[in-house]
Image (cartoon, rainbow, N blue to C red):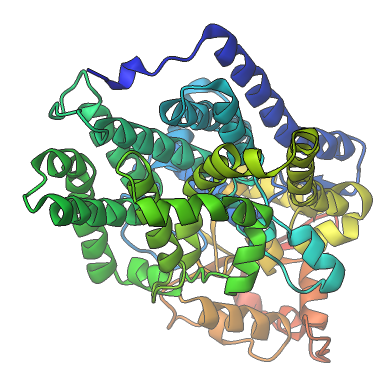
Length: 555
């Protein structure tokens, strides 16, 4: 009788996996090492610790700071209005608690977690490959193609620099890119890989054991709960695929597939209480409900999604055709249903479409390896097989190189670009952050330029008027208020007692002056800065300077 423990991987295999996984993790750390080394020699600016997607990276650090302060309920620190917390983003709250216990900074803990979860992800992907194939060659092919799989986004850039394919814009869809971006993406991919690995075993012919602790039933339950806490959207495609799989078994057997239902319930049941809780929070907590409504992550155009997977799609075609024709129970049925549901979900009427791309590469690479082993190895002449496989892997590399190195342009070679993108801040702002953290009032509201407001909750104890397009609620209204204040168009609203918050600190420095003088479309504002000169003297409790940055403390 086959169990989850019966999948055999030799010591030599694990040694190979560990070495390759370590190298891939080190590869994602190298750009950070370069950026930090450059930061040590820079006197005018400070690297903020995030290369990939700094806007979201800043919010992760802000969540960790809440955990460091002892909280187990998440609040939107880029929203100035006081509101009830919710049990969301528990992963980063936990990391914040861990940082406090370990005596490490949130940033160091964040990147340590990124390294650990990335390594776990690669190990889990190989475990999945070993569950599917007995031979070492397809196992390694599956591991390599899924770990570093990418598309032709780099080629698209040559013809249209404004067209960004999925492999350049959706980090959660590609394991190497995911491991470069944050720790919860690789942790989610690892959990998903282990879940699928378990189902491929228990759905095999002849396996009839019910879920138990020793055969992986408890593991499935715990992994489902973990994903419901970390990245609940990743459960949607695989849960829906299991619904279809149970339906398919019923269609073929004309009887209720009790075995499949019992095991599928190990995934379905834990999701229900989390879904009910999420619904209740979004329905009864106005701020969290508005946050969810404006959190829009649509999928790119279908052709950009297709090119994002590039040659993997072409290679997988024979495997997909075979799976549709034979629709075999051992592996193909579940993987095919998962792939179809996943693709359909990317363009369903759903505000988090793009998040459903996480895990899509797993069934795609599964069919690619099936095609390589069962079709292409026979159609391609012997002398061309190895060069063709090497060429395939080479074509996967350029997009990975781009996503790893492009952010370095703004931190190593062009600091002005990094300042515009929010990768860096001027050193005087860093000193301002230190003052706010050490001497500022906890939970007080700070008014600053968006690039600066992005990082204030990540490195201080304060909240901001506007700093993030999704985590500032209401986003459009607060953004407009900040723009009008600094551009001299409305000096009264943000200082009014009618708002549900009261501004305590106002920053005026190079970022605010640049933001006030001209917008992204090139429009200039002749009244820029007038509101700073017109601050009511009776409201100014204190005024101080940190180099080029002036801090106004209001009563």
